Amino acid sequence: MWGGFYAKLDRRANAYSTGANVRRVRYGWRIKVLWLIEPTTTTSVTLSGSNTTTGQPLYFETGGVQPRGPSARLALDPSYPAIPVQHGRWKEFPSYLFAPSAGCYRLTASWAGGSWALGFGFGR
Image 1 (cartoon, one colour):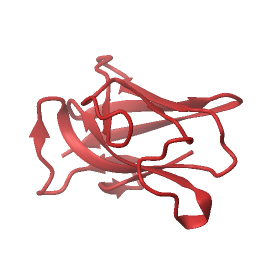
Image 2 (cartoon, helix red, strand yellow; image 1 turned 90 degrees about the vertical axis):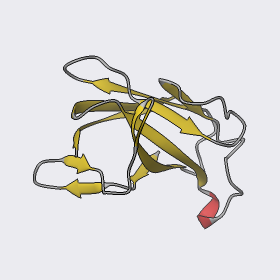
Image 3 (tube, rainbow, N blue to C red; image 1 turned 180 degrees about the vertical axis):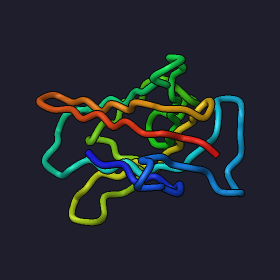
Image 4 (tube, helix red, strand yellow; image 1 turned 45 degrees about the vertical axis):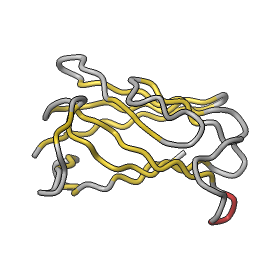
């Protein structure tokens, strides 16, 4: 499971920042993210995250089979990728991640048999 963030990364600070074209909407600052699930993964991957200080959740939104609007949890089912399979059978899920405010966040991905967590800062 991988995520490609369309935001500026300051590697020294491990922090993402938005560009001038990123808008604040009802759920927070909207950042485009492309989630990739490996070809061998057959079970759903669940994403969640929150601000480590305030507990405010990150919100996620993707098209495909579950276009319900932003949610604090996002389940990605490799049986139903959001776009047709391309690049070596990796499953792709274009989405948006919403950060409600500047701060430190923890993002978690979990699936049967595995997980990872990423801590990062976000601000403008």
